[in-house]
Image 1: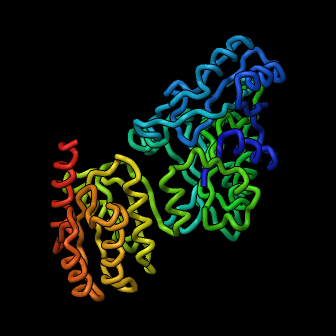
Image 2 (image 1 turned 30 degrees about the vertical axis):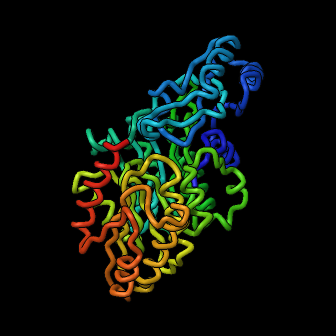
Length: 398
């Protein structure tokens, strides 16, 4: 689960981490009132969306008067901001953060993440603050410094000091940076974060250490322990299909392409996405219907995939284990009848590859149903190639 920057900073403030004075704004008048309340010569107007790269996309403005705050707030609120993380469709700006400007001396990057390979939390930092960390990693990987943290001990003082010195921080700043790191690590652990990031973390001309930007992500599986975090959820920032799928007990991630897939099992789902991409298609989604698929679940999955014009073809790739191929086939037949008003046809091509438990029963059910726009495949590779070709033809018809 993601939250907005201003919400992340409010949590950081609770942990003693220094952040600029700032207030959320939902209207132009809110923004102007917040700027007057802050009263600094420079006020920053920041679009609040769940995506990075806002600055380079024009979502961060420096205002030198209430009139400029009003102007920028009017421009940003209700606009669609397109960043490297939103995709071409962008995200609508529904709220702003109005924040005091800072006298920046130096910018840094710092974050805590879970490292699966080492099975511990790792603190990452770089002197290349304010830049996309993905670009730094690609162009200059040695600029990213790491400290691996023993979960039984936590972030040790010597590790925080070592990181501060490795970042070439001035002596007067090192104790403050160490405290910042320790507090941010405690927040990370206490709140079950999957990511705690400041980009940039800045040292000001007054030698203060500030989280100028802040991003906190949380492990969804721990949210039952954190109702205070759940209360911060902004559903307008979440993909509508993903919300609907979660309500139906489906694991769905929108990938933006036009070739959808329905699979049982996360590993097979990832392999299916890969093979679509490998054969020149653009995957529309990751969709794992799980091991307890019922016909009702299959129908719900079809409705979600077909509720807009994004998808031009669907690949159903099932290996029956806990799931039974005949149950999946029954769900496919029911979905066709429901979606076509009883005509038993799909509006776009659907390619089905079934293997495993009760596979012959499943294939027979589909064969006898005589569903229009339903095509069998004997292997994953055949299925991927067939659905990509059919999706292209479907797109050309439109």
